[in-house]
Length: 150
Image (cartoon, rainbow, N blue to C red; front, side, top):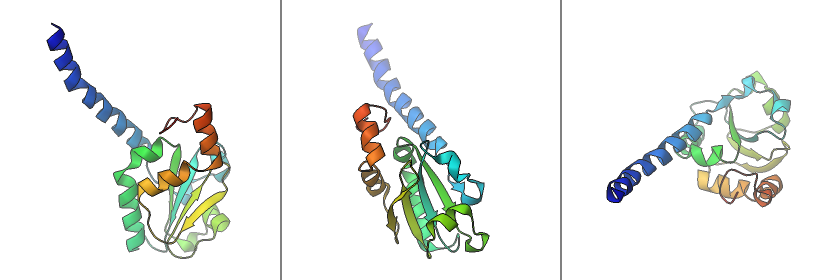
């Protein structure tokens, strides 16, 4: 009976982990900048903003592929991915951050830009950078962070 229980647990445990990861990833759906109320994000979400002058920009396409591939790691860090590919729309996000062409901007929960990159970044690089942000370090130390180290 113990052998059967162990075998069943060995089969079901990885499935539970996969389901949980899929659930976390489903929460991280990119949001168009026009749909964002900037003040609603304060101390709630950690914005990662991807700007481009067109949705066909190769850097934009590559960045979104990278984010989609490893979305779970970003969701664990309370990230909201915001996209803005229309400079003519002059969204609140674009006016505040004033990008030129493709730009990846990482902000902490206080909505202050911490890092700006002119080229796509792997999610691993993004999460390492986020884990060094002052508010994220505080979350980890207080045990409030749901992600790695928290």
